[in-house]
Image (cartoon, rainbow, N blue to C red; front, side, top):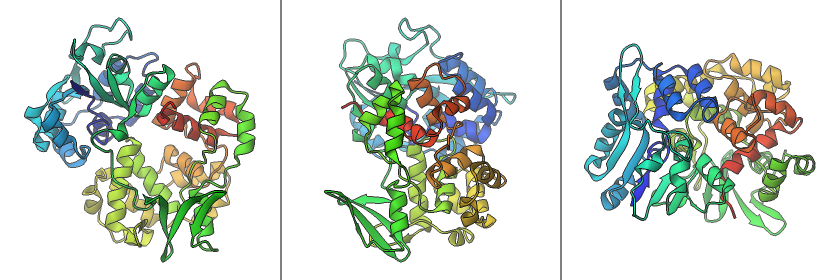
Length: 445
């Protein structure tokens, strides 16, 4: 029996998070997510978050049909395997998406119900009895008895059910949870359907990483003593160094990490990992806006469509769209690619802002953040990632990032406030953040 989670397993984006971002209160959403598994159960979090949604159900469904995307291959999988979908989401928002895919009658759906009241949505949970193992109402009770169960999931709501399955496909925090318990699984990207297409601006194809620099396409391949870069000259060298994360000095970080049990293990398992940097500052900001409040898988899927639509093609890869090109774009064009209307406005606003990126690179961290957050759509989260993934500032610590919060909670259960915890990591906050996030995805060898 094939059992699937819905959000970020069947869908590219967590649709609950999409709805909360577009129609709910972001501050309450972030606060509730930070307390998940600590002072609040999953049901508590969902109930509190959706009380802030007051839009009519029909409006939200229309918006989801325009913006939510199903992973490629799901429809074929549903028709051939007739899976059971078990979700913490709602029948009222999932069924229209299944119907749109033409597979509503091919699957069995078990999900919550919602009463979309004008003073705040009220959730009616299908399960209220606590599981004897995880002490929360969970999906384990939905698994068929006396059948071989294949389970696919990605997050917190899948932890308990996955442990009861015979075979598991996992990604995200579910993969990290299974690693901690020594449970075998296959990465979800090896499943019947894939998360998204290639990153056209940083294209991996035929054993080479390809990137358009100026009017030429650079090809990077492995070599016995490092990498081979063609062509390599004064124009391409700075870009290649960024892509390979050469600005990070790993030796002092590894020496420092030996004193921490978690990081000592991660640096052994991920030895040699240099976080790749974004060579272009405008690309960094657009990519960060794309990733605001959605999964990285979803962000890259939208980014790829964006690059294909507005970028310039080289031999195989595409040059990332320029500010000049985006100043001629319309908001509706970005919405058609998967951006929310708000994010489309932000992207076009950054293109119009004409930021002094060379000047920003010369400023201390606090001043960089102040300049960026003065631009509409660029909050502290985006500014932190700009420091981390473009400027490679060693003390950059994106404490507001949901993925990083999950990683800190998993690896350091007693960490407390994530931003304050970052002070313990001085002066290697940036590398620590990347290694913790990589640890969430790293399958056990």
